[in-house]
Image (cartoon, rainbow over all chains, first blue to last red; front, side, top):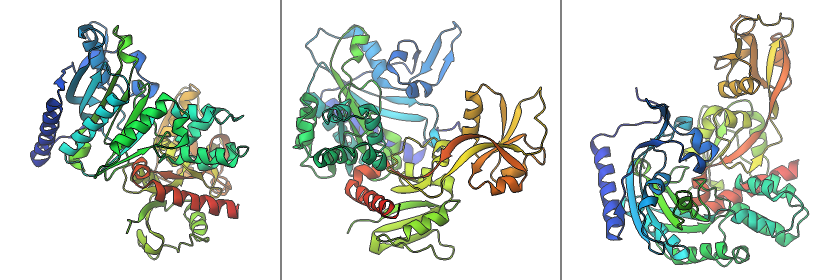
Length: 305
Length: 212
């Protein structure tokens, strides 16, 4: 018996996982990313403000002999920000780093995993589409190194769906409509948008179904956030084995994302095999304001699929 | 040629009204034959799986099926309400309720209430929200028998017409939530087969609109 959501890897599976990890790390090192190692357990308090309610519930935590609450690592990005911020060079410089190791997220809902072996990379100090693109490219290259097969990259941006809806000047609550669109609730959305012009309804349909082209007027209306999505989509699109779409209804996987984010799906399975995004406010909370963007992937899903 | 869309269908309570709905034009799907649990419908580009209701969200979340149809009771119990849910169906609706013996004495004081149910998570949540201690007696079916055999004080189960409930000497104490069948989609399938998925959703939405 093993605790729910954990698994052991032996023989070929263990070898495949280590080999994939080594190939990814080799690529990241070649792209000038340096390794960061952070503790696998830490005080909960510095992390709590950056976790959504669902993320906090997922933590494995315990009280140590001094009475402090300790949480097992559930995410590398916050841990790296906390430990790296005091040592960061002066503003204006960029820092590239990568990490690898286990994260534990409890629940193991519906028989799913609770322990994940993650490899990820972060680019600090660089705002804008160029840095976002670099991270998506490192992610896609890492998946290729892991022999993930064909991938589908879905691009989105925090707040973009709400911003697009607010431009339609609807009487109904844009927050409720955005939620219905994220849940892809065709009937609820159709009912809520009956009063719109045919063009408005078609725009809402594009938001719900996703697959928004880079030259779509919806993106143009979103200002810099839309321009980033269009730029990244254009730069990525002409590739084999990699399909890129913009879908503003895609939900962000972490609550600290502040702008551009993406999810990557493999040839099988229902959940993303990798993902990433921009978190420009996280480093300020640890005393060093810094734009930041990163990605992570779970090796188990790649090795098993 | 594109691969078939795989749709997980439930064998349980809503199977009959769902089969009637799917048999309508333009989809016009035939019934499952004999004991087969998978049916290929190449002319419609579909593969149908016939599953236990509680397995439908698992197949969809893990990507073994692109889409599925299942009650909102099952989605809530299996913590799968985060799956995309494009459509809700007008048939097979009912309510999830707390039931008690119609002519029984009030449950004895001084011990936790015992509640028999197939829905342990939903039932625990209902009592926790009210700050009432309850012992859940998890059963796989025929839960209506439990109070009569002193296995439980209450039952938490689906009530449709109320016939089964009354036939077993129970009455409805409180509705916990409304239940309706939902179309669910796996997120990976949306990324991989966006056009096919939403074309199928629109086809079903049109059938719902045409037939009320």
